[in-house]
Image 1 (cartoon, chains in turn cyan, purple):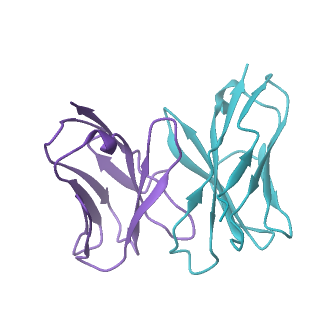
Image 2 (tube, chains in turn red, yellow; image 1 turned 90 degrees about the vertical axis):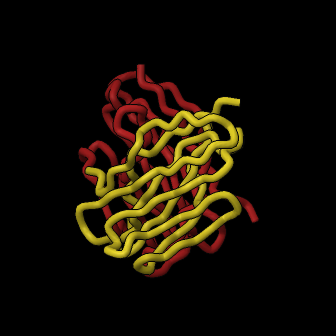
Length: 114
Length: 108
C-alpha cells in the first residue's frame, strides 16, 4: 500500500511569508502528527490530529497551525516565517488506538527560509 | 522538552564490532519505541517495548526495556555499514517524544 506522502518535498520561502505543507496518510490511518527536525533541536513534536480534531499540541508559537480534513489528509501552516523555521518538517500517520502504535513517516518537506 | 536522554550522542564503530546506545528517563514510561533514520531519510519504526524487563531481538539488534521502565537500550552486534544512521528512542503517549538520537558511523 502507498506510504505517507508529503508535498512539496522542497520549498524556499522569504522571511515574513507564509507556507502550507500537505500530508496524505496511509489509507485507513486517522491519526496524523507533525514534527520539526533541525540539527540543533532534533525532532520536535508540533501537533497531532485525529478525526479532524487537534488532540495534542507541542510547544510551538501560534504561527504554527494545522488542520485535518475528513479524508484524514492534513495540512500545516506557518505564518510570518522566520529564518529559524528552516527545517525538515515530517508528517507521521498511525492507526487510531491507545496511542501505543507505530508511526509511519513521510519523506518530509525541506523548508528553507531566506 | 525531551522526555528522554540518549547516550552517546555519537558512536563511531569499527565494522564487525558491537556497540550499545542507551535511553534514560527520569519518569516511568508506559512504553518505548525505537526508530532508525538513515542519512537523508526519514525515521523508520524498529520496535516497541511495553513490559518491564522486556527483551526483543531483530537479527543483530537487541532491544531491552529496564525493570523500572525508566531506561532502554539498543545493542547491535557485528556492526555493518548498513547500520549507519541515527537511532532514536521515543516514548509514545499519544505523541512521540524523541530523544536527541545516537548517530552511528561505521569504519570499514
